[in-house]
Amino acid sequence: MSFEENIRRVTPYTPGEQPVKKVIKLNTNECPYPPSPKVSDALKSMDTDALRLYSEVTCGTLTDALSSYYGVPKNRIFAGVGSDDVLSMCFLTFFAGKDPVLFPDITYSFYDVWASVYRIPYETIPLDDDFNIRPTDYHRRNGGVVIANPNAPTGVILSGELIEDVISHNKDSVVIVDEAYIDFGGESALPLIDRYDNLIVVRTMSKSRALAGMRIGYCFGNEKLIKYLNDVKYSVNSYTMNTPSLIAGAKAIEDDEYFKEITGRIIKTRETFSKSLRELGFTFRDSSANFVFAKPPVPFEALELFERLRERDIFVRHFKKPERISEYLRITIGTDEEMGELINALKEIMK
Ligand SMILES: *Cc1c(COP(=O)(O)O)cnc(C)c1O
Image (tube, rainbow, N blue to C red; front, top):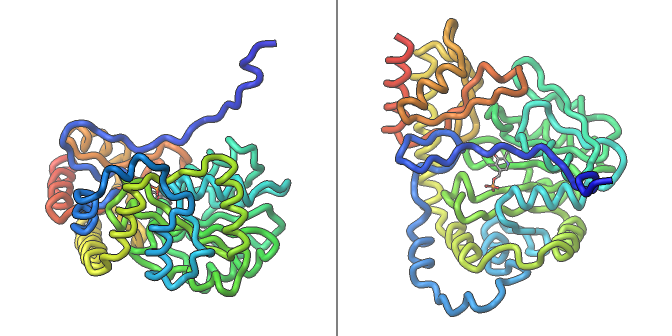
């Protein structure tokens, strides 16, 4: 017997590259604009003596701000170190049963990793040929359901009515709706937490609030579910969020005007960029997120374009697996200038 037999082994999630030199970075769906000036003011004037003390276990500074902004009581909010932390805690807390947890075959590629590391049984449900989620596929016995809406990496939105269909047909399991991109389009499931005690709605400040480096995520749900989540969190690591993140997150939420301005700008850029990309012959579904997921015209291949762009210091994302999406590129929406440079580079490569 060797100690290797006792080791928990898992195939990890592959994060998008973080290049050190200056490049056009359209590969991890970060925001091209800086965070709110209120965030930088608060961090610059922060009393660093406060760092002597452990951070707030309740994350109260942040959940207070979230509570007044969204009009949701504090006992229905849970915060964590990015929504990856929130989602991972949700998997650990809510999916301790024997029936398989269901999620689409093409979706955020961390879901199957958490299921594996926590030994949670799961089953993936194929999207239809146009990358739509079919709610009726989820009308069956399961140990939980996870849906990213808008979905990643497709950018396709499921209507509020159809999301509710999934939630209402699964009252005996927890349904997690991952709304990492909802600020760029689509109807949020958040109001449904008043009517469904099996619903968790997850959000992040990494994309629409320009704070990926601060690691701030949160979720909403029935107070009972939130209590169970906190019980697990306090059994793993109580002081998850650091003090500067709590302050920065609260300030980002308070500056609604700035938030609306940058998300509005990204949506506008997405629309003009989508038009130019279609003119080059790419095909794709309309995106409700801050990226587009597009297939190049014949005879061009996604992997080759990915590499040729990379040689020019333009980073986009290509997924080799599953095979169904290996002919697509996921392109984050940057500034108008960045998207213009990308279009010019594609024109040169494809001429
Ligand atoms: C980016 C992303 C996350 C994780 O974001 P954090 O930076 O950990 O908050 C979660 N879900 C989806 C679908 C994402 O695209």
